[in-house]
Image (cartoon, rainbow, N blue to C red):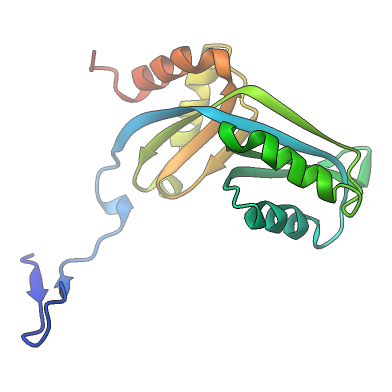
Length: 186
């Protein structure tokens, strides 16, 4: 269980550390914290054709405009599987430029419209092994549900679970999630 640090005597490179391997499931799961971002905007591209290449056209145009995109959801309209809505978030400072970019390609992607919602915020729990620990997401969602907070978008990764919520709910959401995962801390 002693780590070995292997380095070259010929360069100043940092080298490699060799140590015991383990999976997250073998160690105790720890959520490190609750984070929030109130400077996000939700953009919805309405009624785009459900064909290959639409997402590429939207997000390559945004990338060409140097606009970072965070959460992305594509959802089929239940009545018409040929039409979809593309929903994503950007930093609020980039929202109007993102709208202009998407409106500029709307004819090419057959979009029926573009809407912007500035009254949103992203709330996240951050830790390790989110995907390998069943029940973490449900605890977060339960804490928000018990506070009457609706989830607009959900995004998960190995290190975080994020939800887009209405902007006015941020303080309550942070407190409820904190109480769920850190009940003994003031």
